[in-house]
Length: 151
Image 1 (cartoon, rainbow, N blue to C red):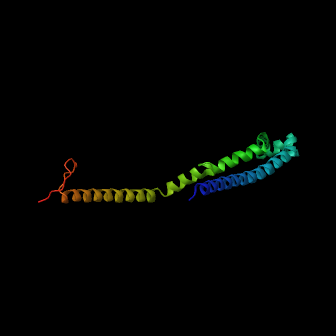
Image 2: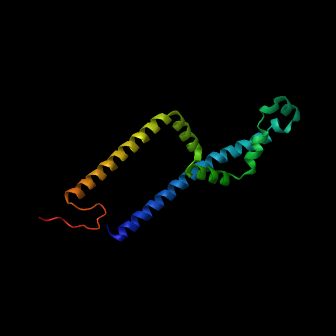
Image 3: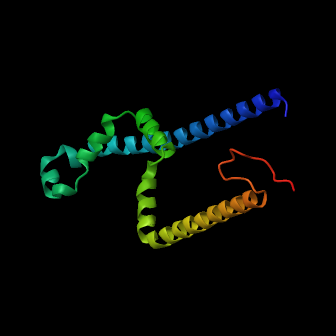
């Protein structure tokens, strides 16, 4: 492949990834803008302004959550959500993996044990083949005197 083609392909990949991130950011922005609008509307309603109605609802009202929603600007909330999507443990990926591992730990350990077992025996087989090759050539294992015996 020519160097120019590699550079063009790398640039296309970078542009593609950037556009995908911008698309995800736009989706998060729309979601958080709607949540911001609803929180602002909820805070302007009678539920948060009338203390009697607020006291009657008790802990069920969402005035505190709405205030917290309005404290962070929409573009920052969308940015944080986009970062969370592209991080390794974002959107509970690590929690889901650990839960899967907890339920499948015996299968995973069995597969790892089998892989270690076959790797060990493959290495031992290769060692024995190497030793047999050295013995058939009548050479010493340390290869200090690496000459073939001729009668």
